Length: 76
Image 1 (cartoon, rainbow, N blue to C red):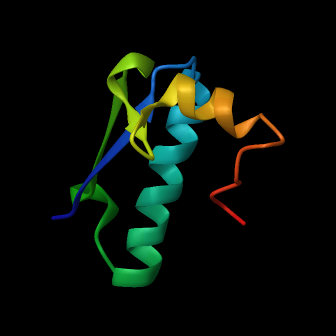
Image 2: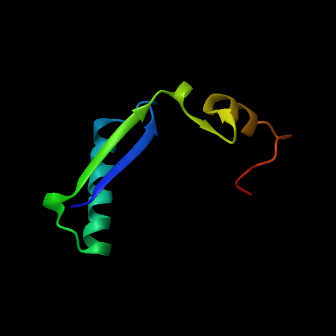
């Protein structure tokens, strides 16, 4: 019985978007691992933006810096 925990920042994901995530994740487990969707659990936790960090910075600061043309782009 799979249990998947998805953590996202609390920035207004709609109920429809969350339902789509749950369906897509369940579908992937069914398709790839042949899991029973009736016993597949998906939990979405929303984390306050100020409680999330990336690259050693709070997310808001990371995003602010990432928008700056002089800051190295960590995805390139």
